[in-house]
Amino acid sequence: MIDIAANLAVIHERINAACKRVARDPDTVRLIAVSKVKPAELIEAAWQAGQQLFGESYVQEFRDKAPLVSSPVEWHYIGGLQSNKVKYLRSKVAMIHSVDRLSLAQEIDRQWTKEETPANILLQVNLGREASKSGCTEEQLEAFTRQVVQLPNLRIRGLMTLPPNFTDPEAVRPYFRRLRELAKQLDGLQLPNLAMRELSMGMSGDFEVAIEEGATLVRIGTAIFGERVRKSG
Ligand SMILES: *Cc1c(COP(=O)(O)O)cnc(C)c1O
Figure 1 (cartoon, rainbow, N blue to C red):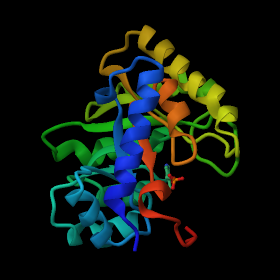
Figure 2 (cartoon, rainbow, N blue to C red):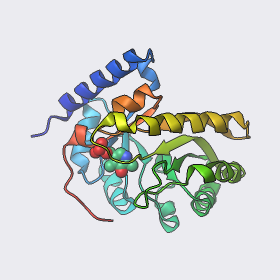
Figure 3 (cartoon, helix red, strand yellow):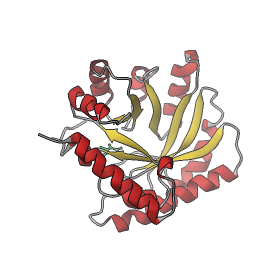
Figure 4 (cartoon, protein in one colour):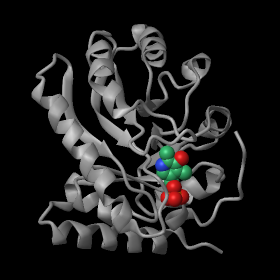
């Protein structure tokens, strides 16, 4: 049996140690437990162990599973998103991390028209220029941001990236550093409705490096819930 409480305790220790190395307050780093492909019971077990934020990557799975979780968890949507599925996230997620194109931003804006508060979103940047990953390019980011800030029902809270997979976490460091620089540049534009407070970066294999480079949201799955059986789509 997987001991989720023990895994969470180890991760918190590692988060604290990474924060200490760069003199950061650990309260500035929030842990998102990535529960995709994992059953509601494991989410409840993590909640019992004190975990409050959960990340999901597949809309259909999220739709089916969220009603089975009775604890008041905070859901973050972190996966690829087709515009026609945005409606299933409305009123349910605290943040969408994967906004990478104007048509998607426009659909979220449309779906949130009737909500009392705007949608909290992150812009996803494909720093490694990988065809297999979503995200706008660095070159597109400023123009994209200028368009998104005009949508009244959205609030850009920061940036997200999914860097190339390397076995050595140090190899990913420049990508994390770059995301922080880009966020700073965008903040410098002083656009309305824009405060780059969040950097969503770092997963099981590299979250400590991400924290050293400024991550405020780390998305960790395997190190909490164990390996995932692969699923396509
Ligand atoms: C699955 C996933 C994660 C978690 O990855 P682990 O290596 O299991 O920690 C983080 N971010 C995104 C966007 C994911 O899809």
